[in-house]
Length: 111
Length: 116
Image (tube, rainbow over all chains, first blue to last red; front, side, top):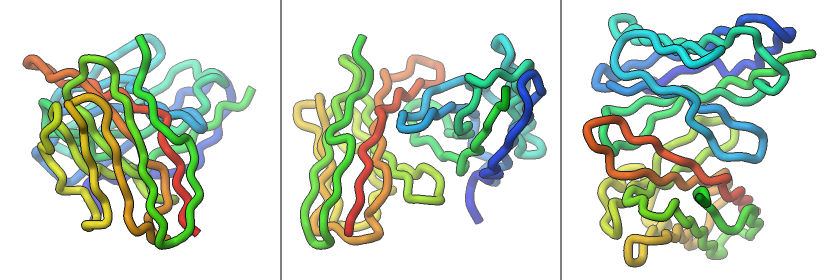
């Protein structure tokens, strides 16, 4: 069983839609939860991170963590074609530690 | 400020040959990580340097892989001899040492390796 499960998609939605991306995990030692965005032929770029359970909002993006369910989510409001990318969830125990990634969800926002 | 750079961007080699990948981290970043993404799979950790020392090499697949970080600056990852299953995208990431908060790992664009 993988430590982090993420539906690879692909996911295609119309411009302006609300997008929901999710990951589940099995290791209760994870304390930091991250969402990376990766455009084609580029490296992953940190979008948001959350410590422990709770919500975090940054503009059109909201990250949620539910440690009791081992479930994390990323919501994108008013989605734009420029949001089209692969979204990767990643987790770590904290500090300078390796990241454990989900498989990534390929998202396309159609104009 | 320059980001993490990796060289080469692409490499195509034959099975049994040797390939060396290079990563230049962001200046001043003590942490350097190598990750790999095999087609259809998730990005997986290979190893972690703190300055010139190997902090964690639990993800290295076997002894055909050798990583070095000379003087705590750039790093190289050598695969010798390369096998078909080594094909994938190799990412390097770097970060500051965290001070009470989660570090942010900055990724390079990756090296796409194809072993034929």
